[in-house]
Every structure is written in structure tokens, then in C-alpha cells.
Amino acid sequence: MSLTLLYRSALTLLVILGMTVSGWAGEPTDRIKETTDKILSIVKNPALKSPAKAQERRKLIRQAIDERFNWEEMARRSLARHWEKRTEEERKEFVRLYADLLERTYLGKVEGYSGEKVHYEGESVDGDYAKVKMKIVTEKNVSIPVEYRLRTEGKDWLVYDVSIEGVSFINNYRTQFNSIISQSSYENLVKKLKEKETLK
Amino acid sequence: MNRTAAEGLTVKIIYRSLILMSLLYLILSSISPANALELDPPAEVPDSSFRFGPELQVAQETSSSPKTGEALEPAEEEEDMIADPLEPINRAFFHFNDKLYFWVLRPVASGYKAVIPQDLRVGVRNFFTNLVTPVRLVNCLLQANFKGAGIETVRFLMNTGFGMVGFMDLAKTDFHLEKKDEDFGQTLGVWGLGPAIYINWPILGPSSVRDTIGFTGDLFLDPRNYLITSTPINVGIRSYERVNDSSLRIGEYEDLKKDSLDPYVALKDAYYQYRKNKIKER
Image 1 (cartoon, chains in turn blue, green):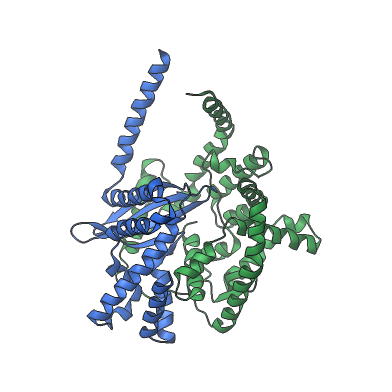
Image 2 (cartoon, chains in turn purple, red; image 1 turned 90 degrees about the vertical axis):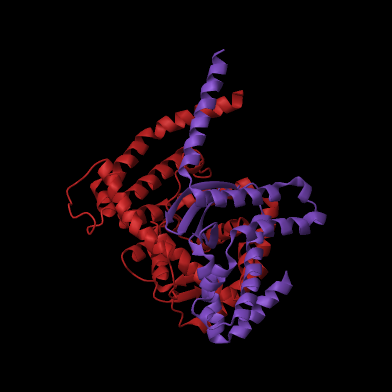
């Protein structure tokens, strides 16, 4: 009898706690959560684990990432001052190649999934910009702080940068792109991106 | 509720009451005048009289909002990177370290990984982390981070006393007290010293002038350098720690190489950003 009471009060507590937790999180966090959950469900799905299904699994993960990331924004920010000098054609090609590289980078990180836990640690919104903080705890009990930066253009919140342990993707690629362009040329950068694409 | 879960809970409760006093101390130290000073930006709060409670929270909010605003809208990014006048030498050492990793460190670490179970390897890492607590503790103090110093003290006592001389990180797993990863390089950064230039040392890897000074300074705080005076044994222990650590991180460097167009630049920038962030987030 007392046990049922215990269960009941525990349940009530859980409900209240769940309510407050969801009350804290804003829209950007919800969007990140949605995508993360989607990717986790694909990664965890036993039906997709066989090597024969690897291709399909990758396609599904790529789709999920694709929906949430603003590749053009990322490309623009990563090329920085070099973006202005590019023609419309060059920009399109670059966005495609860069998106492919980033997708593969991301894919590499999630495909090795082995029971990591995700904790959301709050968000900050400033007009059209938002930051969502989370912590990934590996099974080796290492916590990795991850931060998503999002921007809304009227409708959906889309990611334009990811930082892992304080290292921002777009900053890191910008430094690389800049170094390659200044030491050789933009054409050489595109060549290198294409080499990565065929490497897979 | 099953029995083992209930027992686990009791053990946790006992531990919890054991450190309740220390936690209280931490909370008290977090609202000490020293920290209030940190939170109150003089420009925002001209009234510098000491405040308690809710006012402190207000001060915290005002201090954090302009910071996020600035960080959220990097409209046109300026090129923020570390100076690298030694690039040719650095690149040479980068290639040396690359070969060292693929030809020596990775094979050894893989073999070690195949023989020693993961839990034990994590334990060894915890043990070394616990052993070098003085480095983190002293640097917390040098950065006037008294809360961090408190956490490090509690962690050391708890993990040494109840966590099998540091093999178990109870402070983290059971009490969410994470280590404060401070070193002298960061302390110098907090004091206002920039990294100067990038240095990619052979064997030791990415560093800067500031962090090299920091690394040397920390050697004086490392208890191993006082306990083990025989150089070959000292180096042997360090090499073992490196192998153990690498065995838990196989694949990270490979990923960096795979994801980058110029691994040397990618590593340099990752190091620079990582350190900058650590100094900022003390």
C-alpha cells in the first residue's frame, strides 16, 4: 500500500519535473533535440545495423543533418572575404562540396555512436541568433561540451556553426581555407575539396 | 524498486552526507566578495556596496547579456588566428609527430588496448589525473578561482579516500564534481599574456610560447617530479601515461586528418581555439 503511494508520488514528481524541464527549453533547443533524437533513432535502429544497410543508414542520417543545417551560411562564413570574390556558379559548387565535407565529418562523429548520453545545458537567444549548449557524456565518462549556433530567417531555426570543446567548425575551416587560398589559389582549394569527395 | 538499486541509493546517501559540509563551503565561497567582484562589471553597477542574494543574480544577468550579444552576431568575422612565423620548422615537426603516432604510438596503444580492459584503462587515467591535482589546485588559486580550488580539494580528498587512491572518479560519477582543468599556461592567459607564436614541439605536439612556459612551470607542481627522481623511471611513467591515454583516444587524430584539407593548419587552429576557450571559461 505504501509502495503504491511511493510510486504515485514519484510519478507526480517526474511529471512536474518533466514539465519544468520542457518549460525551460526554448524553440532552438527543441529543434536541436528533434534532429538529435532523429539521428539517434537511426543510429540505434537494429534493422539498419547490418553492413548491407550501411548505405541506406548514411542516406537517412545525411537527410536528417541536411534539414537542420544552413550550408550556404556556413560556406559564406567559412570563406569570409573570399566569398565576395566568387561568382554565383562558384558559390553554388562550393556550397555543395563544403556541405558534403561537413556531412561526412558529422557522419563520422555519429556513426561511431556507442551509448553516449546527451544533456542539454540551456540556450541563449538574441534576436535572430541563438546558442544551444549540450554536453555529450561518453561511456568512458568523458564529457564533451558541444555548442550549436543557429539563426532563424523568419521561419525555421537552422544551424550555422557547431563548436566541440570550444573549437568552432567554421572558424577551423576558415583558417584552413584562408591558408590554402593565400598559399596557392581558390582553384586549388576546390581541387582539394573534390579530392576529399572522391576519397570517401 | 529492486534491492541493489536501493542499496546503491543508501551508499550514495552516505557519501552525500559526508560531503555536505564541503558543498556548503563551496556554495558559501561562490557568494564570497571575491566572486561578487568578478560578477559585477564596474560600468554596469556603479554602486559597489556589497550585495547578497537576488541582487547578485541581477548583476550576473547584466554581465552576461552583452557578452552573448557580442558572441552571437559575428557578422563579418575578422581573421583570428595564431601567428606562425616558424611554420616550416613546425610543419617538419608535425610530420615527425605524425609518423611517430602511426609507426610507434598507435601500434603500442592498440596492443595495450587489446590486452587491458577499458575500465582499467579509464582507472589508470583517473589515477594520474588525481595525482596531478596540485597543478590544477595551485593554478585555480593563481587565477583567484577559489570555488575551483575548493572543488579540486574536495575531489582529491574524496577520490583518494573513497575512490581507490584515485582510480575511481567518484566525485564526478556520483556528485557531478568535474575537475577544473587549469594549468599555468591558462593562468598566464588569465593574467593577460597572449600565446605569442605557435610552436609544434616534437613528441609533445601543439603549443605556444606562453603554453611552453606554462608547461615548464607545471612540472614544478607535478608530484611525480618529487617522488620519482630517477629520470629513466620518470620518463617511463610518463610514456606509459601517454600510451594509456592514447589507447582511450584512438581514432581522434585519424578523424582530424580525414576531416581536414590541411591537417597541420586544422590542428594548429583547433589548438588555438581550444586554449582560448579554456582561458575564457575558467
